[in-house]
Length: 398
Image (cartoon, rainbow, N blue to C red; front, side, top):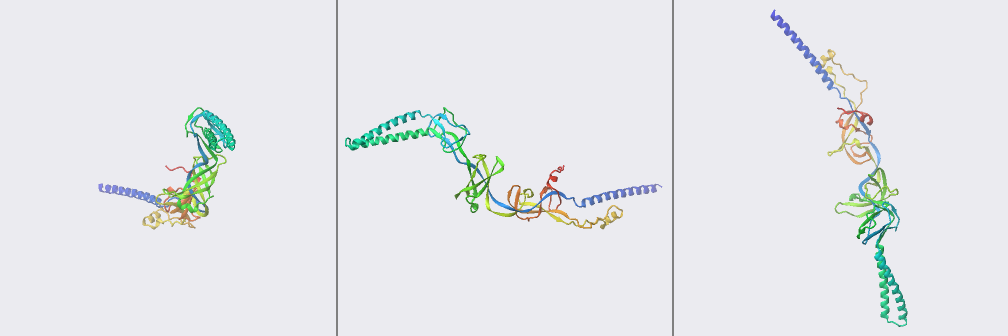
């Protein structure tokens, strides 16, 4: 009796273990079927590589300078008597700007002019007397020398008086004054800057291999940080006939008009020299290219026909699961389903400009490339295409 009870309990335990093992096996099998199924496609945005006319450019940098610009300084020392300009105003050609104290020089000039008048009278008198042989020839020569000496003295004092004032050497805009009335200034003291802003120039350097591509009159596009959305157009006015020994670069000068006075001397400028040839190039958005030290690459979207899913009923375990209704053979579509996959391709890139980049080698026009979502991709990954706005508006995964 006891033996029968033990056998019964052992049978119950065995059946329970078998039932639990079967349930666990079915759960594991179903999970394996889920993980062995195809992954859902990754949402990305794509664009088409296009063949576009591409203007060849030579980039450079430089600093704007006024075509005429000087630092006004005094030539001789003295006290400032009068300032005849306001800071920042426009001045005309030969307009008086600064007057220094010149009382001593004015007095010396009056004395020299009086001596010059006397020398002229004596010279004319001597000229008449020497004709009548009333005075010697040597005496007349002395009177002539005195006259020339007086003329030279007046000219010297006139030049000194001219140095006691500053006049505008050209029309332009004067800067902030550096001196005040009553200041004593030494020779060479700066008073203000004078700049003609109607025409500017910029000097820049290009590698010597670009010499055959340059010519006088070639158009140059100029951008400055103060007006990032505006492009100012100039042209090459001079090319240095000598290459710099230390840098092997060639100095080039471009001139540009500045009628509105927006540009100021000293501004940093980004330049682009337009070359004559304009060829068609394969162009893609710059966001499509991944730039690395090992090479630049992008993902090309390609159509792909997936292989039929394996039939779980073909295996021994699968046939048992199908028999009990826990697995089903895959549905065979009437027409083959087209999927999209990506291929990582290394390319040779060219010039980048305005959000676009030239692909010199590795891509053909008309091919689709991924522009947004590359970080989620691997070579051969399945993708689905959506527009940029829908992709960027998706919440980030935690």
